[in-house]
Length: 246
Image (cartoon, rainbow, N blue to C red; front, side, top):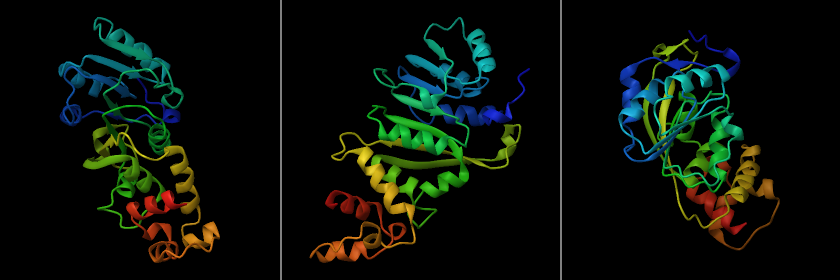
């Protein structure tokens, strides 16, 4: 029996209906799928039933890695890797979809790091803390913020559904949400530079933009109006406009 490791933020989803629901969010058949943090394979089992072309499992916990390797040793199209996803190199790997049940303490870091890279993936299905999902979702949070802006600027975001904490073992302190991110292809701006700009304008969120850049900009009335506001009160479209002008 596997004892969940608190140091790795392990909470295993134990509801089979929810596992099945997650696996069917996006087309899996004949696709190259990567699953992050498969744990004991609850969602993995459902993905396998949908017949992916290839399935890569990334599991940091060495004990779980060994059990997964035994569990799926007879399935030829599964590759199991013992690695921290933050150290995983996505380059030169054909991946169509990613399913992830990340520890919540690294979920935002993973999302940002992944989106900055030029990895080509059709969709990410992520289980994250409900509070973080609501922070990203403009329908639930009217104020803009660093993670929401960067996700909106680089992906098509969709909030899917919540998962109550009692459907996990051990029961976490927070509820969870499932979200979908579909990275926007062929963006006409540098994502690394965009994120640096994002960090700068949201570092002092109470400051107006013109106080952050300390520039007497511009005769353009529209820009003057924007830089006289705080970043949290601007839309993603308005922030992108400023980014391109600066």
